[in-house]
Picture 1 (tube, rainbow, N blue to C red):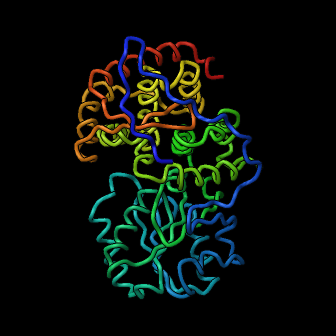
Picture 2 (picture 1 turned 135 degrees about the horizontal axis):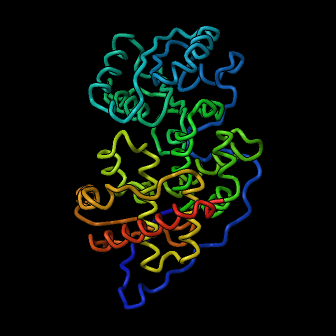
Picture 3 (picture 1 turned 30 degrees about the vertical axis):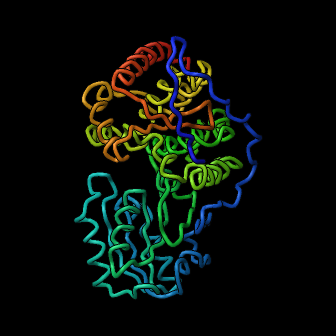
Length: 375
């Protein structure tokens, strides 16, 4: 979906109403084949009888395996057993996978190991097994190494699965999500919710009805877990595949996450960003009162934060300045337009953000005082 740039007229009663998004369609009962090029759902990925991982990205042979430290602790034995059983000559580089290690030192470490292992430039892709941070580090290292070396992504987190990433191939096995902590599953659900809010009203409805089941079962619930993952991947690849769509939830969260680390996970910062954007949209008439209430209540049901104290102090001004720098001096801000659609606005100012943040603080105080509202 290419978000429509709009200049919203200001009146005493708010901006002129926009077209409402299409009504939600019936959710898919079973996973669709994902439409993102090179992405496949492969249950049982580490089963030695399954050749998918050994053959991904090129002919069988040598592989450098870069794996998240926590993933290696949980799945390393099975991973090595699989590669040995399939006759894959491999070497493993274990890296921490949190945001603080997304540095050029980590990139150079991957590039150096790629060189010392001596893989061929095109015939032996690097395997990146972990979350989104690991994928970014490996992706940059492979891009720099010998004018681009292919790599295969094996996402082990919801954020790594749903977020747009490059790679020769991406192999998804939902079983990796079983070992995630509940808070990390909730943080990953924020990425799924982002796709639903800006691109897929039916997915939003699924999250309203079954979101807690997904959280409780870590996406292993029969008939729903894989279906939601497939739908989120599809929408993220195309409806949110443009730069404008991917910015949704990432306008203020970048600054907020950096300054709040390690207090906020990435998905939690994204959710706070989306909550603020929802209130801005509500105050402009893009989202009605009922829709705004549904959005904020769903965030709470998924055990996600809707606000953070930093958002109302140092983060707002800094985040808006960062946004301007990243977008050629323009203040383009993606906002939801109803549920399942969005628009771009270019007339955001600091006073409007402060007002929206104050409204959100007041709403949160009421919601915190009445926890049964989320039931």
